[in-house]
Image (tube, rainbow, N blue to C red; front, side):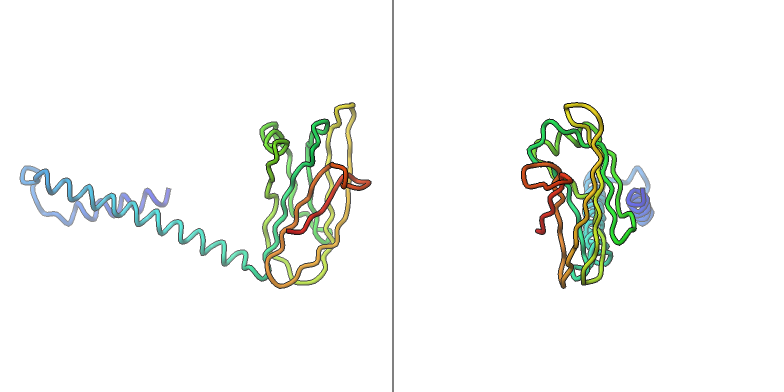
Length: 175
């Protein structure tokens, strides 16, 4: 919305800068004005992209950045309903899955569930999930993981199900 407002404002300013009568405007002048408007649009789009990159760098500096990803192992007989992520007993994320999200994850997709900042050192991460196995019923599992954050970004994949998943059906993988 802000981009449209800026664009409209700039267009009005350009139009007001011409003190020509409507009858005196030639096709070349209109074409020149259209080119100027297109240049302004391009500049606004470029500035928006630069601002988004700057915002991400400021909000999530690489020395403290931390991101969590969720994936499914080759689990066709398990339907993931919800997941909750806690760090040091504080809920970071809670997500309820839609059919499309599950379908994408079953085809190998990975969901970025959280991005934030943490200090270097060890942190306790607790993952809880609810799923429905094809055999029926409801499956509730929870597992903890000691996250070792060093200098630089830290990325952790939480893989649900699979042969290496352990007792609680979760496997953690540092990237």
